[in-house]
Amino acid sequence: MRRHSPSIPVVPEPASVRCPTCGRVVACEPERRPESFPFCEPRCRLRDLGAWFDGRHAIPGKPGEDGDDA
Image (cartoon, rainbow, N blue to C red):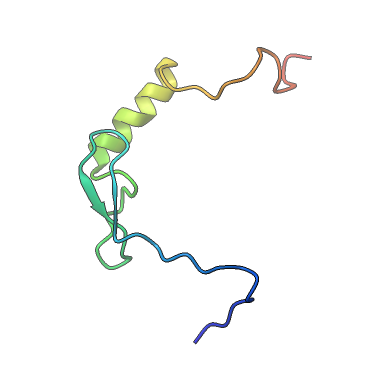
């Protein structure tokens, strides 16, 4: 049995989450978790990746903040 510090609460992992792309329920338990987790299937994972490439998903910030432009 793992012991934890009394000052750090243990938060149980949820039994399931929603796929970020389509909203279907996805199991969180390691024995039921799909390879594409947290996505329900590889197709949803690829749709999300395409959204990043197309610029539909972005991390907010000012242009040039990453330091690569200098």
